[in-house]
Length: 98
Image 1 (cartoon, rainbow, N blue to C red):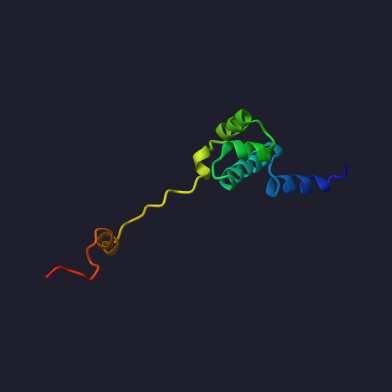
Image 2: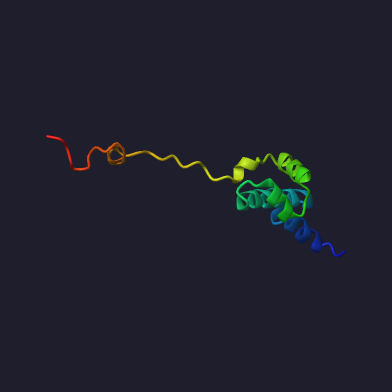
């Protein structure tokens, strides 16, 4: 191997490319996170899409510190306004007793 290629190969491997194990783990974690979000946290469906058994899919989630709930949308908190409260209770309808 020509000696002038050694710095190029070393620099390329250190500067732009990650080791295969690290790149694979980064890909798998991102893939799992995306598929769990896509399915809304439905692990049976996520495992089916990924072509894995559900138990194996759970093992992968644990390996990468992910949780099935990570894919579920946050609960919407409904705050009742004074107008909604008055309307529901029959008040504020413009027909007050005199």
